[in-house]
Image (cartoon, rainbow, N blue to C red):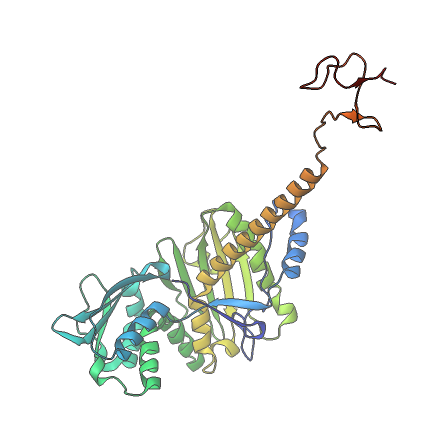
Length: 372
């Protein structure tokens, strides 16, 4: 369901009037030796893409499904179940007795924690009367609306579909927005907020007086992904050298950050990496707080998507190189030796003395020379 959009590099991931993260995207190779790191990073820069690929914040399947029901010339029945990133499940259905009554539900294992951290308050504020008092069975949250009372103009229907398609975003962004607002108001505490948004991965939010630290625990199944992520995130760390206003980014694979050790996380799995962002006033202020929350909610998917693209790119280069080498070998292969008949100027067959006569000729056929 990964719907992608191309945007200019100037509007790359976490980049706005005060850029958040580096604009460069790198395809890089798997090098086991430390001395190959600089070579790998130079390779990254040489193959940097002119266009960035970012995942949509909204769920495109959900948006298109709602638009289809709103724009249908006559009421249609629907029963659509589909998934999103991070184990999210959606369900769009219509009432069998009233096809104009549409119910949209979301299920997410961490929804209970998100609702406790402010997601439910945001849901009530955003969706208002559409919020159901009790969610659909096996789901955490549901809304219901009537297509007959939807806006009559096309722009209004598109806005309604977009608002509904951001259901997951509103849930995961609620803890970020609440923490950013508390820091701006000067009443933020010091307690670390944990969001277990995946079975073996979590997001940690630690408010400071004038900044906010966001830490991602990223679980890697493949050892090659760890190497690629290290090189890719190294470019994030170097962004502060060239981009004004970029946050501090650190990445570690063996030891958890100091903030994690303060809450008792001292030993970590070797397959877990820790990515820390230090956000400042420019990123968490009222002007950019929503965009920051959008980018943070998609960071994990963004990272893994580009790791897979990097591996696919390198595999393509390797396959092309193999094809080229096979062509070189084929051109260097000598042609098989074939015995050819020799003829005199008059057209008679010339055969060395002692050689077998040509096929179809007797002993008297043809001209037999003396060899030299």
